Length: 87
Image 1: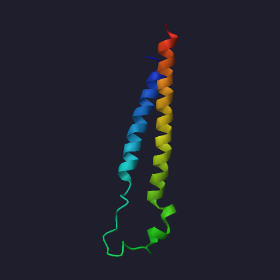
Image 2: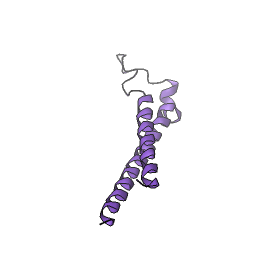
Image 3: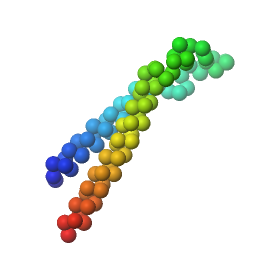
């Protein structure tokens, strides 16, 4: 194993743990839906949803997921070309 493969493996582990944690920290979309009218619509968090922690976590989920998939493609390309480049 080369240093690049070890570094990519460590990065994959870090991104995997990060995406799991970010998804677990998010609240469910069904929260506060217990009222007959569908929940409280005029709350402070409902009006400022773009500035809340949920919007922050949603944004970071997308960023980490995209970075994870790009890293997986890079790792597979490295091992594919290493496998066929050696013969």
